[in-house]
Length: 152
Image (cartoon, rainbow, N blue to C red; front, side, top):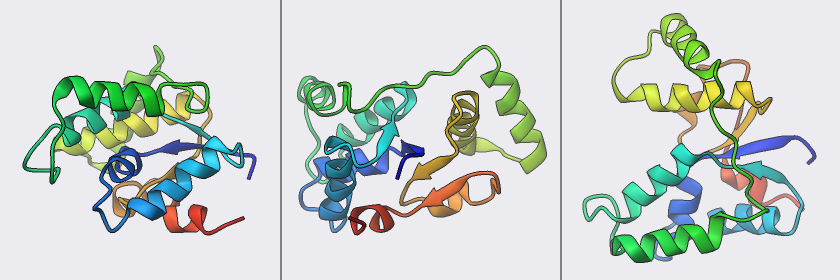
């Protein structure tokens, strides 16, 4: 697979949660990235979401101390295998165009911001467990992690 992917925050979260039913599958995705079988990106927003989840006792079974959480993110995901893509000057306009077109409200704005960031960086595929959050965007390829981790 040569096209670039965005890795949604749930993949790193499940990789860091060894008791999750999705841990091995998510680790399979990360292993393919580390072995250069697929090219994947992260965004600062995704890393912030990972931090928020893994330090929250309501969302993570054994939350990490913030310093440990930052270290885990830094050591596992801030490297040349996971280049960051960033919002551009045009991302805010793309975000609001998508909000209007798809009638987005509430916290769904964060997913739309990711989509606009992807568009501004020519990334049209996302690997996520939250398929329904992104399937409304017909121009995106939305891929379940099992479909990546099981490929050779």
